[in-house]
Every structure is written in structure tokens, then in C-alpha cells.
Amino acid sequence: MNTAGDELNKPWLKNYPAGVPQQIDISRYNSLLDLFSESFTRFSQRKAYQYFGQALTFSELNQASQDFAAYLQSLGLERGARIAIMLPNVLQYPIAMLGILRAGFVVVNINPLYTPRELEYQLQDSGASALIILENFAHIYQSIHAQMQLKQVIVTSIGELIGIKGWAIDLVLRHVKKVVPAWHLEGSIAFKSALHIGAKKQLQAVQILSADIAFLQYTGGTTGVSKGAVLSHRNILANVLQVDVWLEPALTLKTPAGATVSKDDQLVFLCALPLYHIFALTACALVGIQRGALNILVPNPKDIAGFIQLLAKNPSIHLFPVVNTLLAALLRHPNFAKLQFPNLLVTIGGGMAVQKNVADLWQQMTGVPVAEGYGLSETAPVVCVNTPLIKEFTGHIGLPLPSTEIQIRGDDGLPTALGEPGEICIRGPQVMAGYWNRLQDTREAMTTDGFFKSGDIGTMNADGYVKIIDRKKDMIIVSGFKVYPNEIEALLMQLDGVMECAVIGVPDEETGEAVKLFVVQDVTADPSENLSVEPRGNLTEEGIQNFCKAQLTNYKRPKYIVFKESLPKTNLGKILRRELRE
Image (cartoon, rainbow, N blue to C red):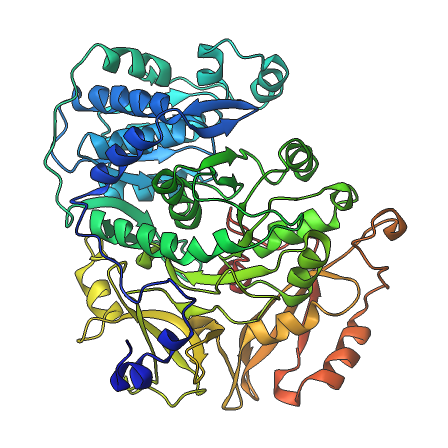
């Protein structure tokens, strides 16, 4: 029962769906290893991962990750050693990730598309002892290996583990080998060889406590230097259980075809987002293990045509975590309208702002609304999310999860009035222990009463629903007035002919800062072939200016407009305003 204090300070609790607890209890787990052991026993015969049509069962995942863990232990690394993973969504990723944790070490996720400079920085900053890398990117590490002091490099290929079972992927391998640059790394070992060595060794039991580090999850660096968020076993466990209880009401929903999922049915997750990113890591890989779900891995979601072929072959998905750019790209493809999703229960939007026109079109095409959520690397990641019971896209990021507190604070550090904008501050068991080897940054990021300062500007209404306005560092000050890029970008996306856009502030002698708009034009050739795309007009600078005059007050209007063929993005699809400023 809610107390009067809860109603006042935690207005979101009164709007929790029936059956969702206000608090989660992680006391039954000492570490993630306990959760893994429970799921391996309970779901041993279920399929855990599907990749190029072939499956890895929970029993096989258990054995392979145990073998990999035993191999890592044989390297003689110190307790808590950091092991870097530089892989896309291949079977080797979950095996390596679980093996590192089961060996008593720490996972350092690395974007496979990093440049040599970015890779060198993260390896050195984390103090990594070993690296698991796809052969497609081995030449990147080769270019910096002289400066590194790694004890072991483990190299794998797209089809290495598929080949072990004799699966037919000749066509896939032919395509991959064409794009693998030449490389040579003295002393490196193949992933398959590491598994064979580990299979002959005994995995030594390790004592892991909830406060021990599980992941160094580096921030995207969209606003500056990338920092390693220290995520403990407790942080990750808490968020897995928070997301799990939040999804429970989804099992009472009827699918577009009128079916429901029973408690005994296996959930199917579509894992198109990269597992090295905290969103997919928790929402797909770890919640999937806890739930005994099947994760269908998509190694390259940017290949939209191939992705749609995969969707056509796997219509029975229940949960789809996704970002706005991927939704938009799918909806633009002429073959998307031919797909059906009879079992889809929840589409979770995160990683970046979901645009209303995209969300509305997705619901029109699939029958399922986009439940937008919010999180950060520093919060393991989920903080807020809409309930799966919503009937349509809401435009806000939902309610704080169980055991999570949110306050909207002003520049004075005090909570703002309901509805007033301020910085979103978060307190809960999923909030990181701090930044790796960055004591001052940690102090600056935390309040004295234990709230993490997100750097995002938002509001909360009387019912506890939170809305993101923009990044604090991206806010533009024009003649003393605050301008939020997200507002202008969302508006411009309603204009015919705009495929994507970004807004930044630039110095201006008269107003301090001025609004600069970057636009990528939609060049859809024949909209009649794609019912999901409306006809587009020809965009001009004058047309954009006239549109903005009718929709925006003077200081919010773009002073500069630049047309571009593409915008810089993270591998997740988040637009890098920092690079546009630079």
C-alpha cells in the first residue's frame, strides 16, 4: 500500500500495472553466476540463440561458456582482470561474455567499428589483459599491437562456430572473406582452439560477490571522452529483475492475431541491436537468459534487405528492442509491408528519441505500439519505460522502474515543481558504482544524497510520467532563451522530404548562439511501390525556412541550413551532434 509520502514523492507508483511490485528483491542471487546456473538447469533443452538459422541450446551455451572460462583461467590472469570483447552479434559473443564472468573476470565491451585510436584508448584505459576480436577487424588491432601489453588475443570469424557443427554457410563465408583485410598477429589463437583447450581443463570455482565488477561499459562518447561505467553484478542483476517484472503484464496481452503467451511458452526476442551496447546486453542477452528466451541474432541490421528476409523467415517474435533509425529504415523498405508479426507483444524503443511519425507508422503496420524507454550506460541501462499495456505511442519515456527514484532538479540542485524542466537525476540499485579510474568525474556525476546526474533535461507530471526534452550539453542559448534541439528535430521530421536531421548551436555575435540545421533529404524513388512511404516533395532552404516560420517562434528558427548526404552516427544509430559541431 502506498503511503502519503509515496504519493507525494513517488507519484509514479500509483500508475504501476497490476502485479508489478514497487520494489525488486535480488537477495536470492549473490552474483550473475547464480542466475546463469539457475537458467542453465531450468531451461537446458531450450534454444538460447539462433544465428543464420542454426540454434545453440542453453545446455550447449552452458558447456561452451564453461570451456571458455576454463581457458581464460589457464592464462594465469589476476582476479578481476579485464577481458575485452570486440564482436558483432555472433554466437561467440554470448559464449565469451558468459565465460569471462564465470571465470571471475570483467567484461569490457568494445564497438567493432572503432578506429585504431579509439580501440587503443579503450584497451589502455580499461587495462585489458586479453581481447576477443572478429577477424574482419584484426588489422585494426594489428596497427596498434606494438603499444599494447595484452597477454592473449583470440581471433574468430563470422562462421567459425557454425563450421564446427558442419552447417552450410558457404555462401555467407564467401561474402565475409571478401571483406576481411589481411592481418597477422603473432601468438593469437582461434576461438575454436580456445574452446578445445578449455574443454580439457577443469573450471575453478570462483567466489563472486554482488559488489564485484561485472562490466566496464564505456559511454558512447557522444558529448566528450568515453568513460568506463563500473557496473557491478548487483547493478546488472537489479536491472534484469526490474525489466523482467515490468514485462510481466505483456504476457496478458493479445497479439495482433489474437493469441496470448502462457507462462510455459518460450519468449522469442529479436536481437538486432549490438550486444556490446548496454541496451541489447541487458534487454536481450541477460533478460533472455533469465527468462529462458530464444534470442534471434542479427549480425548486420544495416543490411535492411537481408534483415527483412530474416523477419520473413521468423515471424514468431514476441519482443523487439529497437532504435528509431532502425524502425525508420525498415518502414521505408518496399518489402516491409509484406511482413506479418502475428506473435509480436512488445516493441521497446530506446537508445535515442523515438519520433512520433515513425512510431505511429510502425503501429499502423504491425498493430503494436512502440513502448519508449530511457536509460544510460551508467544505469545498466533501464531507468524508465512505458508499460506494455499502452494503446498508442505516448511521446514520453514512461514511469521509473521498481526500486528506482527519479527527481527533476534545477541548476540549484533542488527538485523543480511538477511539469518544470530540469536535470533528470536517478537513484536505484542499477546505478553504477562510478567511472573507472575517474574519481573526480564520479564525484561530479553524483549528488551528495546518492542520485546520478544524467545530463538529460526532462519533466515529470503529476502522475509520475517522465518526458525527455534534450541533452543538457546540447541545449542552445539564443539571446538568453533556451532552445532544445530535439523539439526542432521532431518538428522537422514532419516535413515532407526530410529523411533525418540534426540541430546544433553555433557561436553568433548578435545572439550568443544560433541554431544550425543539418538535413538529409528523402530520395525515395517511387513511393507507389511502398505503401509505408508518402510521396515526398523537393526540399529547399526557402521551403524549410517558411515551414519553421509557421511553426516556431523566432529564436528557435534555424539561422543556418546545411543539406548533407548522411549524418554521423554511433553504431547504434544515434546521431553524433558532437561531430557536427567539430
